[in-house]
Length: 449
Ligand SMILES: NC(=O)c1ccc[n+]([C@@H]2O[C@H](COP(=O)([O-])OP(=O)(O)OC[C@H]3O[C@@H](n4cnc5c(N)ncnc54)[C@H](O)[C@@H]3O)[C@@H](O)[C@H]2O)c1
Image (cartoon, rainbow, N blue to C red; front, side, top):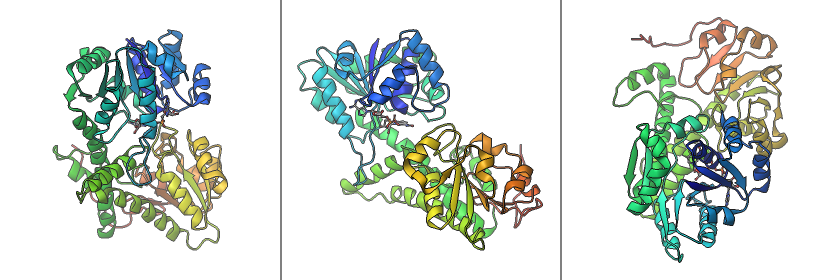
């Protein structure tokens, strides 16, 4: 099928490239001329494992190309995916101006029957508004919602091996077109869930809010765990072993970030409030998330309170590992808070330094590697659980530091190894480990099997 994908960001690029790999003829369109020029030159402007290689393969096979010319790409396509950004609006809802801007151009350009597929995450009711606009075209334009559930860092795998493919189809014809597009995945046994538009839209929001809620829940519990001498990692197993609950998304830390969870939770709250409903539970999710960062920085500052000008080595800037995305990253907030509290921050991230520099400028310094970031530091603050941080040699780290504190904001380091190197290990909701290796406080015994 001939497909146009409007928006070449994380979702548009991955979806377009994967659709090409499924055998379709795909044109990626973006308004960002630099981005399109870079893609045409074979350079991928975002970091996503495996994506560059796949784009090169698909462009070489002439199944994938990029352009800024929306009109001609739309005219040639049978199906137009919309994957533009839907950022938060100042009032707490969604700013849908890019989405409706793109939709209006698509409708204007269409000179024959087409299907418009909304891939962007949109508040319930948006698909219906797009359908009403499309109905004004002299040509038959079907509108279908097909929310995307991929995760940055594992985006290609997630697109090609979806837990579910959700279709919010207005009509049987729209549904049939989407079925045809995804047929290679349907043949492999992946599930299609076909439902009404608003249900598809709310499914995406509900999934993100549920995941965010689990993170805020375990984080809230982690504060109590610290106060009563419990270890949140043991508690997590105690809770997550129940098959009705499961252990995923129950890892305590400095909280969630990224372009989806914070804005989707805020938009749900906003939509309920604007409909006169009180979101009792939803309104606490982001509050708990923000508190976690401030609480963590407070602990770091107490540990270095006797140092005149504390030097902090910040490990990680991306909102999670295996991406260069820093949108709503807890690490960026933590860097700002540490600087405001009087610290000098030297950061290292394997992929997100350029993006972070655009936001933080010269508030912090950017080190070329872990060692340079850590030399002379009074404390290491791990904010993103990249594997390069997890596999560090702690004896070596101890030798180059000025102080002895290691703050693990993702509960991902081997506490015993950090302690054995003569360092103080501080995690989230876990008893600290003293230099020498033994844990302070009570430790729950975890029996595997
Ligand atoms: N990033 C994720 O992990 C993820 C996962 C699932 C869903 N989503 C949703 O998918 C949507 C896209 O997210 P993203 O992270 O890819 O955003 P992004 O900001 O990375 O990319 C959006 C792209 O759209 C382009 N664009 C904007 N207006 C345009 C127009 N009129 N014509 C052509 N291009 C235009 C921008 O230049 C940009 O390159 C959002 O609604 C988001 O909530 C994101």
